[in-house]
Every structure is written in structure tokens, then in C-alpha cells.
Amino acid sequence: MKIITVSREFGSGGRELGKRLADALGMQYYDREILTALAEQTAMDEAYVSKKMEQGNMQHFPITFARTFSYGGGENNTTKLLAEQQKLLKKIAEKGGDFVIIGRNADIALGEYHPLNLFVYADMESKVNRCMAREEGNLTAAEMAKRIKQVDKGRKKSRELMTERAWGAKETYHLCINTSDVTIKEIVPAIAEYAKIMLGRNAE
Amino acid sequence: MKIITVSREFGSGGRELGKRLADALGMQYYDREILTALAEQTAMDEAYVSKKMEQGNMQHFPITFARTFSYGGGENNTTKLLAEQQKLLKKIAEKGGDFVIIGRNADIALGEYHPLNLFVYADMESKVNRCMAREEGNLTAAEMAKRIKQVDKGRKKSRELMTERAWGAKETYHLCINTSDVTIKEIVPAIAEYAKIMLGRNAE
Image (cartoon, rainbow over all chains, first blue to last red):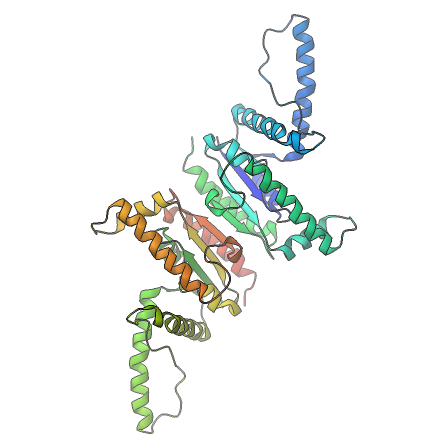
């Protein structure tokens, strides 16, 4: 099984890079939205299963995905949410199959699978420009910069709850990619080539 | 003109990566040894030129390379040596032609040429193994680890004399490559592909 984790600064284009990599390499792709939908689906499945089990016509059901990714927020729920996310990630990995996963500290959660860990970053100007281009919102560049910093501060903090391997410290990743002034699409073939080499070494 | 600078931790295989990259891309290759030889050659050339000029039969000679890279050492000479190195690097760039250069803080010295800046690093175990494999010396692994730390401390310090952009800080580089448990040769095609894309964007 081959897994690529993509950690990234907000606005660095890491998600786009991960999606394009998955497409280029024929791998499944997971990001927060997909995982949330999966968790919700699972919650429904579980309700269904519970009902069925009560009715006594099911012996066993293997899926025990985390119930939800969409807690209301608040610091108190963060640790619980993180734990549930990690559980869901492991379930996905246990199912087998190659995939790319964005964020979720998957490099830590899935460490036992020896994923290829990428970190995507960029200078602030580039991140602001990328965010302004893709959002219709009314934020000024200064407000956007502030938001970017806030989001990444949150990522850093939530990672600290899980591991001592600091978010964004290059030692933690196999490859750190600076996307300042780079069009994501143009570098995908090279990164895909790199991933093929690195993942091929542990080919099953 | 296309320039790739390779900064690296001692024992990370950065020099080998740079040499192989240069070969793969058909670029000239410079490292400390070559620059030293070049500086010495130039010193001889300059002596020759001086003599000729005294004889009155030369109007002009464009090369004013730094006289030497091989100062006896000592902290007092470090700043002067660095300045001479930077001057030599600029002379090389002014000559034109594509090249890969290892170390020498060339990413800073040649900033005006917008080089592609790589940083190569690895975990200590991997660096020790790489150094032990290539050297016949009598150092133990622990002594080698100590030496690696000393060398990199020196690199960090000499960089601090030149710039506030910290040695090894990923923000300073386009791509940071972790070579722990990686055979340099196997990743060269992917990095060459990446370099072609990145350098091609500013093609002359």
C-alpha cells in the first residue's frame, strides 16, 4: 500500500498539489470535506447497523468509523475530534489501496504505514494572492494575511496535541516544496516522478 | 543563464546530488575544490598579467578573480575569505553559462541571477552512515556525529556573517530534500525534472 501525506501552509496550494498528484498517480484522494462526508455516511451506517443488530439479524459489521468530523468547535472538543480523525484515518488505511491525504496530521497517524510525507509552503505574498484569487470574499490583503496566520497557528497547535514533531519542521518530511510564484500544475509531473521513485522503493 | 545552488548538511549527499544534477542537465559544476583550483589558476594568471602589463603589451584583461580560497584559517580571515568567495562566484556568473554550485552561500551571493535554490538534509544516523561509508578514517560513529555537527555549525556561522536568511530555514529555498535512507542516484531524475520545470520558466 502506498500513501502520500500532504501537509501545507494555508494558501500554499498544497491541496491542489495533492489532488493533482492523486490524479497523476491513480491514487485515491482524501481531504477534510471527503473525510467529513465519509464520517457522516458512517454515522448513518452505524445507526442502521445498530437498528439491524437490535433486530437480531446481523452478527457482525466491520466498520466502526468515527461518528463525525464536524464538532461544534471549542477547545474542549479538539482533543476528542483529533482522536476520532486519527481513528478514521487508520480505518481508511486498513481498508488498503493507495491514497493521497491532505492535512489531518496523517503523517503521524499513519506513521506505521511509512507514508511519503510532503510539506508545501510559500511566502506570505504568494499565499495571500492565491487565497484572494480563489475566494470571492471581501477580505483585504491584510485581513487575508491575518486569517492565513490564524489558520496555520491552529494547525500548529492541533499538531502539538499529537506529537513533538513540530508542524512544518523540515526534518519531519521527505520533501518540502516552496510554491511561491509557482503554478501548482506545472510542478506536478516532477513531484509525481519523485513520489513514484520514493514509493516504488517499498513496492509491495 | 540558469543556476542551481545546492546547500546541504554535511553527510547528506548534497554534493553528489549536485554533481549528478549537473551531469543530468548538462550544466557546469562547481564545488569548493574546483573553485579553489580556479582561484589559484587566476592568481597565476594575474601574476602573468601584471608582468605583461609592466611590459606594456596588454591594454586590458577582464579577469580579476579573487586571489585565493585557501587562507590559513582563523576567525580573522573568515570575513575576508567569504568576501573573496562571493566575488569569485559573481565573476563566474558574469561569464555566463549554466551551472550547479555546491555550498559557498551561493544562493545569497548570486541572488540577482534568481538561481534555483535546493537544500539537502538527512537525519543524523543516515549522515553518519554516509560519511563512514565514504571515508577510510578511524572515527567512530559518535566521533563522526560530533564532526558533522561541528561542520554544520561552521556553515551556519559563516552564513550568519552574510545574511539574515538562516542556513537551512526552508523559507530560503525552493525545495528541501530529505535524503535519509535515500540513494542519491535514484532521486536524481525526479529532481532534474523539477529543476528543468523551474528553470525553464525563466528561460532565456
